[in-house]
Image 1 (tube, rainbow, N blue to C red):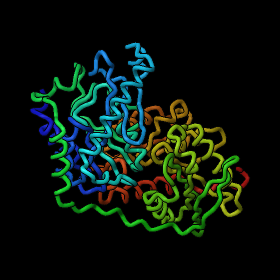
Image 2 (cartoon, one colour):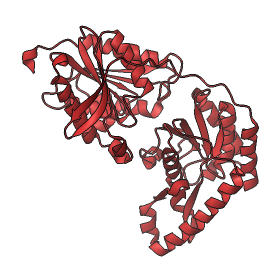
Image 3 (cartoon, one colour):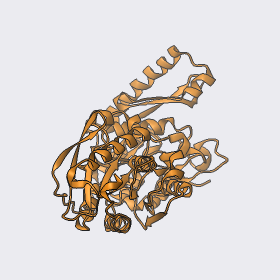
Image 4 (tube, rainbow, N blue to C red):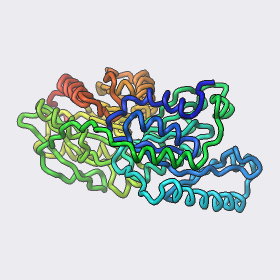
Length: 442
């Protein structure tokens, strides 16, 4: 046994999530069993608590076996493999969905007692359950949080199978689990007391959280804005909005690539860009995807599409009179890091240096060994999953490379001094590797 009960599991999990204390985080517990776990975490972090309403779609003759899940906002996740294996016809699946939707709506009314859901727009959302088995419920919960505007999603559970990360795909930005045993058969086997959580306990947890006074938040670092003009970046047939800043006598220009969200409006990108501007480097902050394109999450992970946009933007930049002869570098974050490496590997790309901040270079896959631009990978010390992915990616690079770990930092580098450290690392890497190139080399 790993845990006495769900409250004990929550206290242990809270210790692992200490780095989120004081940040703008919302804790969402999955009813019913995940809520007591989430309540302990929310209390320890001083964060607001709410429920993420998801209902498992159990196989009719074996209800404990999930064939999918539904959630608020019309989210629906189906495990096609289970449906095929159990030979569930469409009409039976539909009947289960109707029944579970009624339960979900009834519980929403009872749990919140007329309160509005806690706002998640632009915030870090910490999704918590008492464990992961098939992963369908957790995936649905993460998709619900994403649909509600979460800027970042962290899925945290006390226990899960050893291969749980593969089951979750890309639905969460960070995965945290205390125990991932090989001999996993059911979540309850790791609890001394795994008795059912009733609705009254869920309501009590939420009311206790509402009555708790709010804790002070860490403020974001001051985000001065680079001073360049807005520009229309021509990327193939697309016109993308950007901001080009060129200090006097700039030695080079760094293009910022971010797979999701507005790169040109990102306070973190602006913070780093301003640091590069002060070091005499130009910057181009622009969006790889339009707002409409970003609504389709598949585009965010389409490395080939993002890389083509970045390469086209690079050609546009080099064609401008004021940037001819300047070295070009890439600064990638999230899936934009994979796009940067992919584009840098193209024949004739002539990219002077690449820096990745908390990125996913692994998504560049077979392109990694062909990258010849010196590459710096920056990862937070507490961003364990992404750190492992970066280590694997670096092992496949054949160019000059370095993996820099910022101690105590999480994925978004929200901790005091963390983003400053990222800026210093990026500035030094670019200034060491970028030099003007002869005009004839174009």
